[in-house]
Image (cartoon, rainbow, N blue to C red; front, top):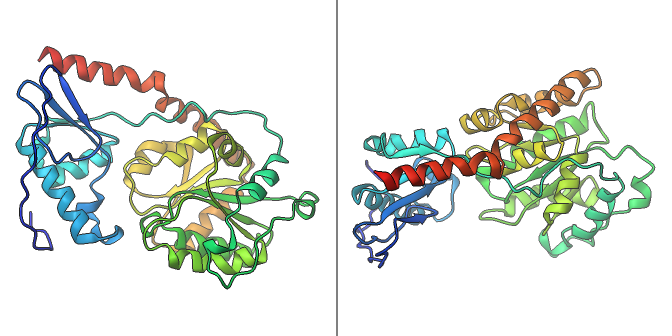
Length: 336
């Protein structure tokens, strides 16, 4: 496979794993294990190799990922992929892994579940977790959330939960939301939860005018019990990513009793199935149109169908559903 950089092929250290049946690594692992120990790589995504334009420090991350992965393949490692979409991408790079790569989906935390939380909690959460002015730049005045003004209104909002980085597609989502604001849903707010990632400055700059107006709220350090409330009361949780290995936020929202709208990429179709409405991740028009269709007053039956499907789909990613697959994989390998 031709890579777009010059990089000396590295040598990796050895780890003493004598006496252990497995060594499970969370990513392509730059080390060798002892004879008699099976290296099992938990493979999340091939984005650094197949979509390097969406990551930071492109040459370094592409090279470090690829060469560690190549070494794992050559040393006989097995791979437990977080989705079939991830496995498919892995096989594009190393087709010889057909018999050594399986799929075990991620387990979503049991802290996300349906509860009848009072709607007034969203005001407290937003006020408490609201990012300060420094998140946007020193020129921005103080940010506040006046709950007393909001409680008398129908506080309707879209929610996005993700690290701020280009691959997550915040800007397209923002522009689609703006179209709704300018046309049919002028009171619709936007709540964004996530840490700052690489190249996040353009995203924060685009957020800034809406944050100043009190239409967009960027939250930090939101614990799961509060995030569960935000998922539950959002008009919809939107997952607009260009690429993912699994995408926790959509399943967390479904488990919490929320509606999900997501980009039409293979992993979302696989993981979310019929519990999401889908839009073209490269089209602002399509994203705005799909959100309008889901949220429109004449589509309550569709929303109820998405909620019912969401509860069913989320149950497939619980500890009880996924753990037996890990047990089977590990015991089968031990016998072999």
